[in-house]
Length: 166
Image (cartoon, rainbow, N blue to C red):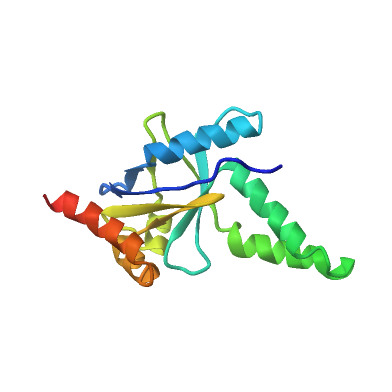
């Protein structure tokens, strides 16, 4: 299915001591639209996994998980049958097997489990960035490194940080 709605945008949100943080409102709207495109009701649960890069978390909705799985299948389609299943499993394992289901309420509040906060190096702030079929959650420090070659993204991050200091 050709997807019309992708995760786009960015937001810096506070994370409290228990790991509670809000999914940005724009992403919640995009979650609802993506579910509607699939003819389904929006599910208030994300699959959140550490990125293979190790410097951020990635959050997938059910549509994103399906889209990702289809990409794994397409990526290995040209392999001989004997190798295809293992390659597909390896790709899934590398990208999604470490995912943890995380529910959020109608206001978008969710609790990031300690293991995800540790692996994503998330402290008291989380920078959310939309990336097509998923969104990323980074600490401001890791975002600064990840986007070192993207002055516009760094400018947005700095703006959010300055707003918090004011």
